[in-house]
Length: 66
View 1 (cartoon, one colour):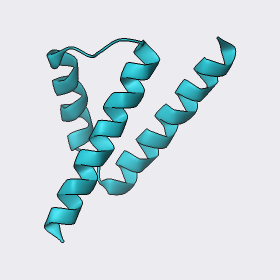
View 2 (view 1 turned 60 degrees about the horizontal axis):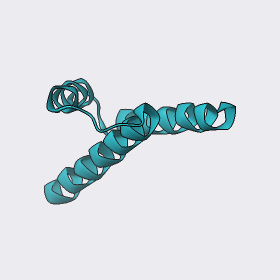
View 3 (view 1 turned 180 degrees about the horizontal axis):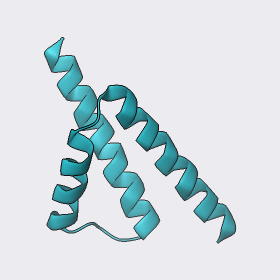
View 4 (view 1 turned 120 degrees about the horizontal axis):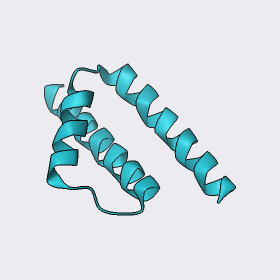
């Protein structure tokens, strides 16, 4: 069960990084990865999912405006 949670967190983090890089239209720097990782580390699974969905909504609106 712990392995599943770890894998879920890693997948969520990859998706968050991907969304941020897509919105920024550039690769993030190592310091930025660390900052985001530390920020999200305090969130439980439900909170990470909420943040992920909010980021998706934000980038979708940004893409439509452009």
